[in-house]
Length: 456
Ligand code: 2HG
Ligand code: ZN
Image 1 (cartoon, rainbow, N blue to C red):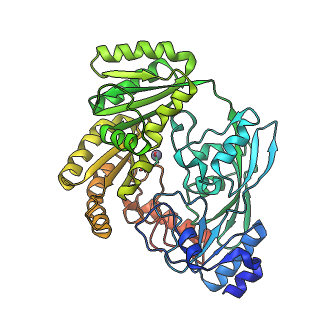
Image 2: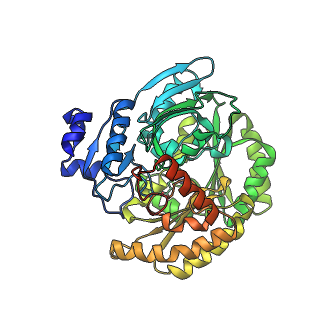
Image 3: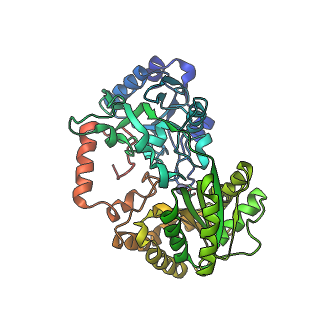
């Protein structure tokens, strides 16, 4: 096998040492076995094609690997697969100054694209805490969301074209940056969020946006959760917002301790909302805040007075995931329609409290999108496997509530290995059958990220 791989890639681009296998064989999850047989680093689309053809002949699975910041095991290689790292395909190949489209290789880092846009007085609006290491190919393959979705939508909205290598080694050049293209099935969108199970994204034409106006951030203390939604409603009546996030007091305690940050408000509240909006609307936001205090929804608030202060306030939200990582949390990333959020949260909270009386439960997320991150923290003394099994066992009870509300068991983190047993809570049997049929069309040998999305 190594000989065959060395024939496709020069030898220093095939790694089989234990450290490399452990490093490139997994993402940010820590619950899954990691056992790839090799890691390869293609430089060109032709090399990816040759590799896929070889894998088809030998029936060896391929796992695509970007920044490996995923939280559902989508980039974990646990069964002797070959990991395909896009680390070397990291160039922005072209930029069109008229249509504002940047053609990126799959391994371009999100922040690299953000900075590239900024240098041209433009804006790449998909943003999240891991933007410094996540890659565009991974973002597209998981349809990454993040903190600005309420204004700018998911990664999908910014994909103007995609070049993919399918499981048969075919190269498809999908949509080619066209604004209008009414010629039947838009296959580009099939590959967005497919987690590499149909083929690998090798290039993406990403649309850039105009630079936004200067932004302000307000953090509000909200004692009762349903009132977070009431505050959201008021903001939306009055001004366009770029972000509407929430976190609980426990989440705030973890992040302030971990990053040594100041608490935003003098008094603690059970929940906090973080809102971002155009600075021109700061006065209106203050009036709105006073209104919310009068109504008894909000106790206190702080409004950023500078970009530096806005950045500090954002840390309170963006640093949470990193601050709880030492607790090897069991992650849930669920969504329901915004109107269903208060009732949904109440029901989930009751189940969680009854199921995990001895665990800390950390709530936060993109509540303005109806997307909640529920992290169960492992007590230090408890064995990791026992903890994972216990949480995994309880998950169906949470997912039953998700299903009843017509929600999703994975809003933005993907399915990967972590949620594949639970797909049927969100997708109907007919949908899953159609997905499997599509998998058969594009990946008849079953070599493209096998075992992800649904059991292979
Ligand atoms: C976030 O919104 C990320 O911070 C990570 O999606 C969420 O760690 C999590 O559960
Ligand atoms: Zn998130």
